[in-house]
Length: 178
Image (cartoon, rainbow, N blue to C red; front, side):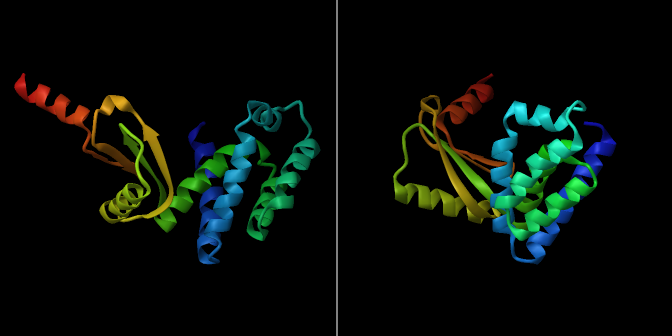
């Protein structure tokens, strides 16, 4: 994506995120964006919207399907996308909207990797730890199992990491012994 297109994408995304936060509709818009992105993840849909062989009216029909199930803010936003003929940029705009909403609301997914499955109380404690240490609000708690970390955990949210895994401690020890 060139710089001009990136700037355009960011402008659209920022405007929707600003309105959503201002009108206390961030959660609804976030859900709408996730639903749209789940459809746009299909390469055939992306190719359809990006194709010059497909007419604007056919692309508009697809976007109007998204409008049917969206919030009022999403309906209005998609109408602006249609009026300005930006259907081909819908996926990157929606991805950027998620980033903007996360930043503006300081609400992020928390991802934890452990060697064994966590109990509910451990999940709650790690979620609270991440919220406190990273100064954010938890959206979803994503648990991954990786036996190679041996023990401890790796906690990630908002591009920040707490790594207390045995594997990383052993690697650090190895580096210190060299």
